[in-house]
Image 1 (cartoon, rainbow, N blue to C red):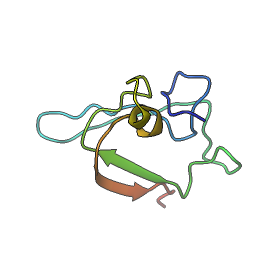
Image 2 (cartoon, one colour):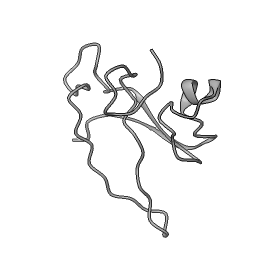
Image 3 (cartoon, helix red, strand yellow):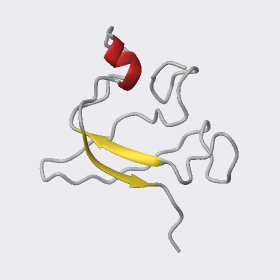
Image 4 (spheres, helix red, strand yellow):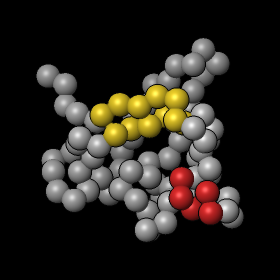
Amino acid sequence: LQHGGPKDSLRHVGDLGNIEVGDDGTSEFKIEDAFISLSGGPRSILGRGIVITENEDDLGRGGSAESVRNGSSGKPIACGVIAYVR
């Protein structure tokens, strides 16, 4: 599959778009997506990583090989694992 955005019909499970960040470097966000699952199966994102990159993701529309691969979003600056917290 090609890299894409949350509204694209052909995309990776993890192609969830960009998160807006304030001038103070913080963000609050909510993602609703019918393509992903938190209850297991091939579309489950539990146990997968989340990566914050230095640049905005162009959602595969940049016209270059890098865009198709990773949205030309640059180097990772933070990461984590998606999990339930009890």
